[in-house]
Length: 208
Image (cartoon, rainbow, N blue to C red; front, side, top):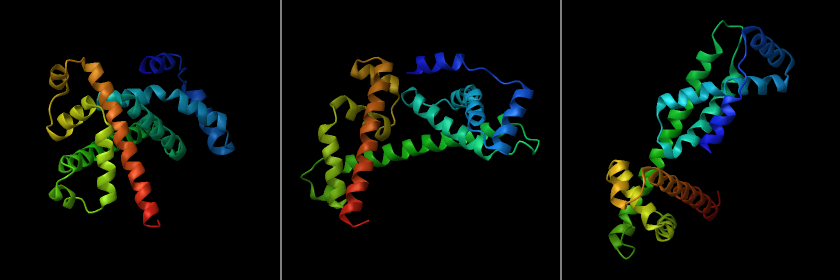
């Protein structure tokens, strides 16, 4: 997927000052959707540049590029080209902020879920059950742990509970670093799905 993205990125035609000024005029004054899309396309290389400066984990690189693109779209929609501020400067702040927020959310979800998973390691333990206020949430976590492949579970625990380096974990599991990152991403996807489904089910049970 990254290779395909980079190939498409190389095809992007950059704007000269006159063309960009005309696009902003047509978008802001006339509401021209094609001009908006052309501006977003032309600044895709900026998104990639900002994301790579942040240095996100390889496993979530494409996710962060997508987040950065959302930040770029927001920047295009909010930018006032008549204030004398360069769009690249304005957009860089919004893209970087969006990416950093997304990375923080990823870490918080993974850490919170793994902390709960650690407390629920023994399904028969009354103490573990008492650590969770809502039994439905506890059951949801157990279900995910039971269905998650051993390697994915080990990778999440090593990364978010033990705070170990990916390379060392990959060596112990006898897999390549790229394979480690693929499994890491798949495990995070399961966790996100669990958090989303669990919240939805709890909301329905409580009449939200």
